[in-house]
Length: 370
Image (spheres, rainbow, N blue to C red):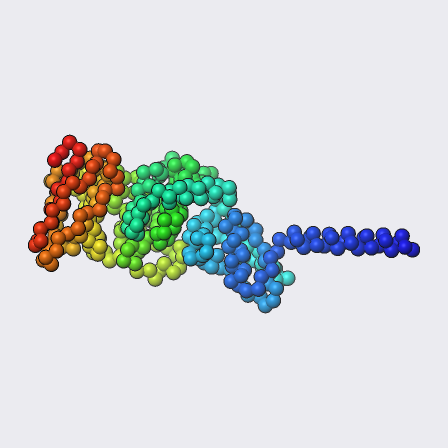
């Protein structure tokens, strides 16, 4: 009898241990609120888990939405990047009769591949010395335009999915528009620049690009994938609008972007100085930026709101351009900021003269010229 009781006790203990083990391995999380469910599912999607299950411990709070899962201001920074990491299909949510919710998603990359992107982004952010939003936006834009090529070779290759990802841009040095936009977003967020990914059409072709917040709090368009295909990418940098671009709100672009205030169209002007040198002027900030490669001939720029001038390191020679501002306030203008690089052949501004009345003239000395 004692032996039988011992056997029964052992069997009950074994069954109890099995039940505890099964409970520990139960993939179905128990949550209390919709916010808790959304946070849990989001955390698992960021690990690229393709099936996530949960149920409510009390009253059913409903299914999480894609917009909630990909909230821009999430504590982990997933946001738009998570939205574009799904492999061409947004996540689906189903509910079983017992109240169990199942979220299903597929991804372009693995969590290990994303770790490589994390390392690249951290290194890029560490190299950024920019302070203003405009400077940060330019840093990321120049980095991508100079180091990533638009992947024309695999543009129509349906088997190459990495071209759509930041990982492809980082490891292969090439990507299509979605990969550019994803990497721009990651680096921008890392350096503290408010940035979003938008999708839509460019001349009736599916396209993805970024919008960034300028120093006045308004938003402007940045398209590094188009800029990377030009000798002078400036026409695609910090623009209040882009010709033939249309944002579509079909699930891939966050709906709140509809309400964003964009920079006024007349606040930014640009133009060509030579075939390889151009300028962009922000009338709101009063900043004139000259970028490109080669030598600047005699060049005069006049605008009453001009405050500062930046000349890109790609300018290898400068004649004596004149930057004229109709100032009547009786104060001299401040020197322009230092160029992005002081390495040869560009030494930078050697003399800045500003009259107390109406004229600002900058004389620039470069290697071999006076």
